Image: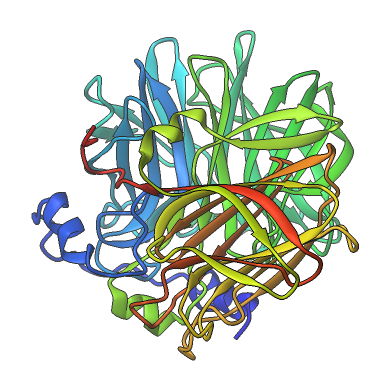
Length: 500
Ligand code: DQQ
């Protein structure tokens, strides 16, 4: 089953409202009940239980990082979506907080509180989200300084329907128009909504407001396609970075479809100069960014499951977020660097040294590396293959292969699992190193594998080994001899206290 099928079962057939059951089980107990699941990530953000999809409302508020996320606390499937909430002072120790907003029976969000963002409006946080059905835009304001309890605006939805004369995909009764992203220009607030225009492709529709309550439609900020077919652009992010403006959209219907464009912003219209994919992985979707107090643009994305719907529903949880990535522009393209704070998650060293292999040789560098960061420094000239989540006979293994001849990086999960519920992918991405040496940083975390190649190429993947011993880190010389350095650390849980 391919990723498109995953999209249609988990993502597009939105399930309708289901009654809530007991939500009083403490988060620590929920996390503890899933801790023995070998596929569960430990240092990538996950919901305490149940379903997670898009990161939402990302903000550093009074020094604390807040990550909200699309969440079904009832189980590992997309339905009845709430905003879950986690917070951290330092990006490496996180705390679960109560669900921030929930569907109100009989309200405009009775069928779900979909994605959106939070802004600082002169010292007051304002949360904007899409209420369904039909899709309309609603607002909430916190009742406390820690953004824990939120009051919905009495006039919700503040924006409903579609702009007059714009043939929005889905039509007036069931429009696809969602995922508010806001910013301020002088005295005016602007809101970008993800949408699609019949005959044009995806669209980001722009609205303005003097007071965050009354909104007037302006025009598309931008529309069309980015690197492939588009009917809808979801989850727009739009912000200045360096000398450029960046537009990020998650494009339906394709998988592997999160793109960014760098370009110019004038007269409230965006003119792109370049287009590229953010992450080569088919599991990566719906990223959101924040500007932190240090002036860094941080991004988290949703890592979708790549196993059958029944499998993640049975697991009782689904979805994780990427590591926080610092965005920058260099050489006319976006760079993504794992936030430096993440080094604070490193615990014991699993391997530290030079690996020298003759052609055809294999070396096991660490037998237990299920939750690990691996850094490999290698000459640009040459090739090597790293195996992670590998078992002794190699029947389960995620392969990461650098090939200088073809200038590619392969991340393959096609042999990662003996289970027929896992959907393997082989991603081959162009990778042309800029220097004489390349640095590969690989984060392995239960079922998550996130690969950064020189911070210019990122490929995320999901893997679901069936065997308890599928935990090793191995190196192969599949071509010529290999001589690289490698460091690997066991990583601690985001929701535990550091031990040292
Ligand atoms: N997920 C949300 C939508 C968004 C989509 C619903 C992207 O608001 O467009 O959970 O994954």
